Length: 526
Image (tube, rainbow, N blue to C red; front, side, top):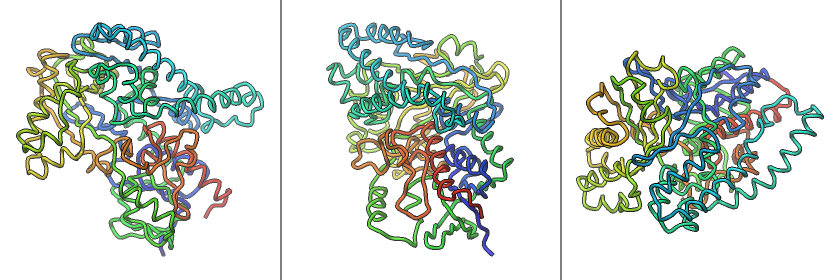
């Protein structure tokens, strides 16, 4: 007899874990299937020779979601402060409060003294958008609270917030223009635009990008590494009767029979299915039901592209953490050169002349791009051997560029070349002398992310912006709709269900999916 569950959840990232945790809390028989050997998805820490490296997100933004979720489940996670620095060449500003926005403006004016008026106008826009988004994140998200029937809370907190939310979220959503295009309203200085926006994903909506200055102040870091967050939620699931299977990819979904088939050919029955994994995989593996809605959505999904991916250098150094604390913070966004990426042709143009020409282009790209640098030991001294430091250095990179080298059978050369150039760039800028103190390094590419996470195009935030009709919901006011699919008894959650996404949105959609299943069941358990 086939084993059956009230709910089967496919995908063990934070969205799937959240959905499973809330269903287990209600006593539903729940199974979570994860394709890899570890749960967490892009909330993942690995160890190499005593050094801890975060393989996905570098820190946690609360956004009124993460901490309330943990609190509602009774999960305790110790967080460290995560100070952020923004640097351009020899200039830098360490973000301590909202007052640091004035310091950021001063830094930009030092770099671009002829664009002072433009910078003032852009800073005004940032302040405006931060005000809009404050409403979104201004209170603990009501979805995770247990006191929604408290009349005092409803009257004094929730109702005033909801009224402001309705007004401000509409204002924010009007700023849906790509960030680079939007900034052109305020300046003709392309280098200035690049240095503000080039570390955001291509065509990121202006409201999302401009709100990030506030989000930087919202970052914190789980003691023990980012994976602690996922591990704690997984422990909660197991303690509350849930089942988690790793190395258990779902290879087929029979919608008519309410069954999933695993890679080992085992077939399991579900009453409700929550898909918290790559959406292309769902539409490729689902059968047994057809409709015009399914046909339309399948076409959108098949035509959609994953957003930008990242190239990451994991570097172990015998330099003490005090050296790095002198030059940066635990979490830094650093641009070595002021020229900006607009000065380069597209990689596709460079590739016309072959892989050698593309390597030359890559060297320039890595000199001009913006790096996100994370140093775990500056937050938690247990995350590196005594007297040593691990660095996580990453930058945006197109999955298709890596495919070009792979098709030319030069993938290994590409990785070695990129790793060396990234280290060289930082040695002659932010971290002088770094090259003489490298113990070992590892390189992760968009291909690595696609292989390890199962995400199409190695995407880390779901669908690409500006690539035609979006396969997912993209309006915050309509986020409750994001969990719907055209399939009977199938919900979705995670980075592919709503754009723009991130870990807070993944957690939020996971909770929404669990609530929808609970509502469908109305307390009935198998």
